[in-house]
Image (cartoon, rainbow, N blue to C red; front, top):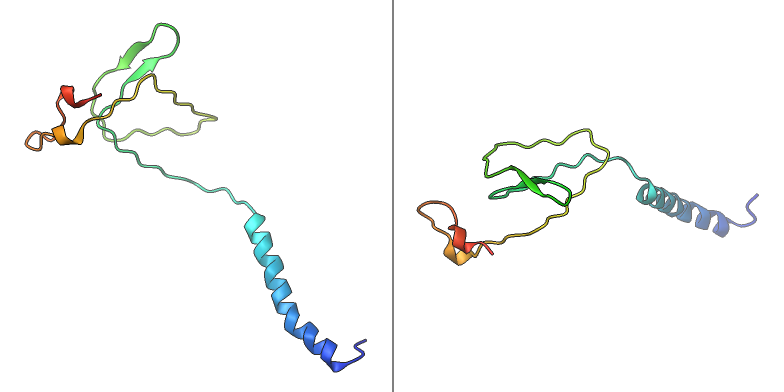
Length: 102
């Protein structure tokens, strides 16, 4: 099968590199489902009912955990985004005054 020893030696030297390259490309393309856990920290949250007449359904309420499970889709479109000025933080009270939010 092999006409000379050099070709056979070259084949033996390149075969592992070809096998590893094919395996690497296959694993790079192969997608597996991954469970993702996201942790967000917010100072306050306000949920409103959608539509033309937005009505608050949850005002300033402290909660420890919020779990959303077994859903087909989720969309968040904030009507407004407020950011607090970090220089106005009250360290003795551990919060921002209402005037710090813009």
